[in-house]
Image 1 (cartoon, rainbow, N blue to C red):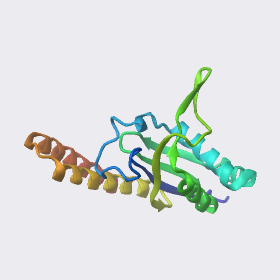
Image 2 (tube, one colour):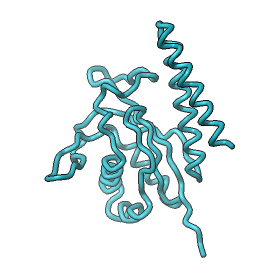
Image 3 (cartoon, rainbow, N blue to C red):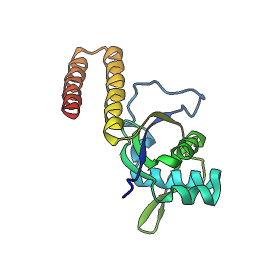
Length: 180
C-alpha cells in the first residue's frame, strides 16, 4: 500500500493599504478589517478559481482531489493549506499570483466568493512549507509569537502590556505541549 504524500503550506494574508500601495503595519490585528470574513470554504473556492485561471483545466483537475484548507484564522490572517506533494509548487504559484481577497456574494442560501479580483487588496505570502501539519502548526505559533512581541513593544499602556505578556506565556505553554 502506498501512502499519500502531502505538503502543508503556511500562508499569511498581508493587507495592503487601499489608499497607498504600502503594506499595513506587521503587528496590526485584522479585527476591524474585511478579512474577518475569511473562511476556509471561501479561501479554498478562491484558490481553486485562481488555479483554474492560471493553469487551466489540467491544473485544476490535478489539484482538485488533494487541495484543502486545514486551518484558517481571519483575525490573524494565517491559514494552513494541504495539497499533494507533486502539485504543491503549482498551488504556491497560484497563491503568489493572487493579489486580493474577493468579496463574498450570496447565492441563494450559501455564500461564495465572487469571481472578480476586485476585492480587498492583500499579499498571499507563503511563510513555510512542511511535510506534516504538526510542523506547520509550530511555525504558525512562532509567527504569532513574533507578531505578539511586536505588539508588546509598540504598546504604550502598561495594562495592555501585562495582558499581552500573559497571552505570550499561554502561547509558550501551547508550544511546549505540542513539542512534548
